[in-house]
Length: 170
Image (cartoon, rainbow, N blue to C red; front, side, top):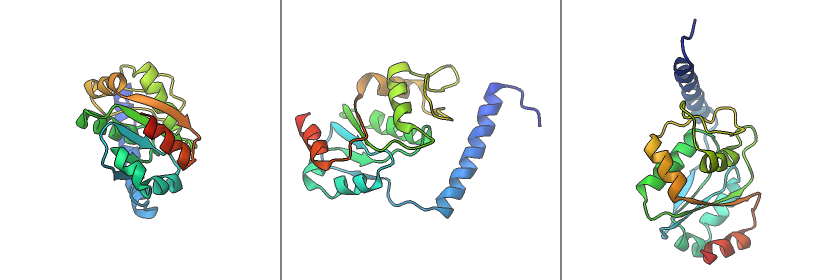
């Protein structure tokens, strides 16, 4: 099969990724990815740290202060979901990025690169080290995220008391 353009390659890659994602969903089901809190201006992303996600979910003081806590396992679809959430929740102002980085996908690094550098004409995150940092959101949604959400960069932080201090300092 001959692929004519970069756009065709991206479409083919997206189709293959979707098929792989469906297979993974059925073969390796993962428990709930996010939990809604009572706050409005702060979100927490625990990257690959599922235990941290559960610790935060079970901490009522934190959940009363934050809008949402979730994980981020992919450098494309997961970031698209964060962008969509932020554009649909205009009161959101901060994203606390903590927990362990996702090996192979580098979703935290990709999110930081997106905030700092934006995307190219093919919607690839500029200077992302991830293998497939190509987004599907609209350019307007991406620019809204870049200009309205402040990322608190704490990758590696897994201590619930320090996370609580950060949340309550905002």
